[in-house]
Amino acid sequence: MKKTTKRLTASLSIILIFNIKTRAQITLTKSKAEDQNEWELYLKGFVQTDYTVDFQDMKSIEGFAAQSITVPQRNIASSNFSVKQSQIGLGIKQRNPKGDDNFSAYVEVDLYGPNGTTAPRFRQGYIKWKKWIAGQTWSNFSDPDIFPNIFDFIGPDGLLFNRRMQVRYSTKISPKENLSFSLEDPNTPSISLPIDSLNWKKRAVIPTFTAMYRYGDEKDYVKMGALISPISYDIRYSLDDAYQTKTMIGWGAIISARRYINDLNSFRFQTSYGSGYATNNSDLNGEKYDAVPNPANRNLLETLPLFNVVGMYEHWWNPEWSSVAYVSYSKVGNKDFVPKDLAKNFQNIGLNLVFQPLKKLRMGVEGNYGRVRNFQDQKAEAWRIQSSIALNF
Image 1 (cartoon, rainbow, N blue to C red):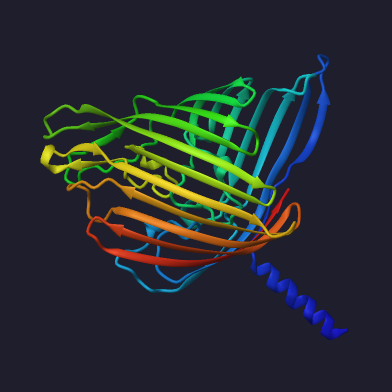
Image 2: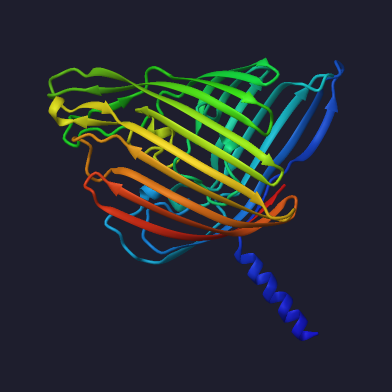
């Protein structure tokens, strides 16, 4: 009996080393008004624990970002335990007698607090009325539905995957076609200013405009989108000068697709290209790659081209076991004046094995490998092993 108890305790200890992630929804209350509209208050989210081991030094701890690998390479091993991916959201919906949502509102937080803490961090908060949505949610110039069944927080480094303050209009133009437009926060572009500038500063003036077209059904689809992002900043060349506002235009295009061969196998693909839109990339978000100063042209900023391509394959071995394999490549435009410490290109590959004994419980092991080369032609690579358990509610 004692041996059995010890074995059971050891088995539970091993399981707890993995991450746990669960996604579902709990209906808190429902009510019907006199006009027969139904109101629903719900809670959803997941608890996830992660344990990662890095074999090289990199700045990004919670998610694998190849661009953040330390150059020159440092072969230093480190580990990290985390519950920061855990999320909780609270929402309310109003449905009419036909079952359509007239009105909804949603707020969501995770545990990525400032300075490495686990304080709650605001992720999403928006109001939706019929075809309109206002607030912070996933950018219209991204595709959250393409994210594969993996544990890493960032995912394939070439994906466009971010949240934005926005006002969006969406409409169905046929049974299989949807079209959406948005005006998004003009403060999101991330630029590099000259080190010796006289307090040059970024300025938010004109909102970013996006358009997205989707064709397909719930499982199989293709999306094509475009972005126009005016990027403004204030300059002056002497203390006696008044500030002048300069504006340049960033732009981007995206194609994203998902295809199920059968219930057990699916492919996902995304590619994007443009100039001055790098902050929409999950790896380069906020890293000042949208525009950099050109010393040969009075330090005026110029947008940087960026190309991304990602391929993903998901396979279910049986109803409980699955795997995802992916490869990602990104390249920043080659210009002589780009700071030498910026990444010129980076790529990563990933592979996992996921066990899902219950609909809302999954656990598994994941491996990530990445490489980066900067504009000084210095290279570095890194490996990461991650185990995770996630429980939805």
